[in-house]
Length: 552
Image 1: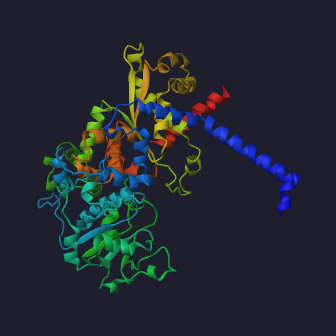
Image 2: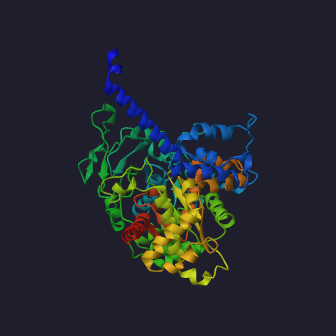
């Protein structure tokens, strides 16, 4: 077939292909995003030097989940000369001590130690925490002592330097939580239950690897000797996702199936739906089972828990309704002390104030968008520019009541915003929000819609009004400089998890939180707080502004 290369049509195709490749190269090298990235690179070189002279690009690469394995092993284990680092905790001895948790013997709610419930959930860190919270509430309602589980790292973390399980004390302040309710360790559960669970509660079909996961994290198996209860009182066999593999065949094990409708169960119905006299119970990938959108709780009791925990008494909890108890579980499941204190220091020293906006954008390539979510078709259309405009629009709304006070520009109105995002364009967005021309253009459209075009002289001038955006690069620099690995090694077990937990706490403490609907990470940050705005609401407002600008 050598003769084909001499045919005219072949020559034409080759010319067209070469021209197409030339156009692609020109578009890449002249693209605005590339120019922005180059400006970001130059801008990062002008920032304050940090230890080992890491710039924004290096930090971003370190924090990228897919890059974590090789980078973490290099930075955690060795110095630049190749010598092994001697880790100490001289800057944070209290944090290290508190991670060594021991069950409290004087909780406000003492549950039956002969009946336990264990949350087995392998659906990601945030869903694991939600499952743990629900297990605590189910334990309170059914008088079962809660077993503190071993958590798993995020499935995209590849830090082989550490064991795969994550101690619960690194995600929850167990010392604080144990003041509310009695809990036991996995070791105690194994002694009580002879390494076998008696009964399970299941919401969704389990994956094939559930049995190995359960054995690895709990040391227990589904080996009930009470299979005679199958077919009675609503108990059925366990359901699996796949039936064609023999390894997926479940054992003869009594399970009570929960409703598959998300958040369908009322908290008042938990005691009935999770009933069983069998002592050793396990939640099988069960989470987000009952609604948390309710009112009717006792605000006086919640205020005691938030403002003066020492005034909260056993009598308060005995008389509390189920909705109040559920909210108390959320209040008592705080992040570990080191996470809260690092977040507080960052907010005070770097962001320089308690009033700020936080925004979480969850929708990267790993987010699974089910068709029932109304925003699925819009996700791929959202670009860095749109998120930058969302930040400026939300900041304008946040400070609209303060404009008259600073209208003469004697004092610059600076709006502090923290962006937590799963995407990799956070530095691009930061650069856009700092660009004066970009700010002036978005305000031209906003003020046009509001009929306040005369205010462009104020909002379009960064000497009068501007956004200061912070992200995980700023947070990493702060932690790395104030609590370096060699002097506070206890917090550096997993860099990605450390950053994610502190970011979540920063969002929780914000004045306004712009959250990502259907994100468990956002859901955790929203617990116990108000002033939460769905990001799609701001994007809808932005779409209206752009539509009016195009018409007129």
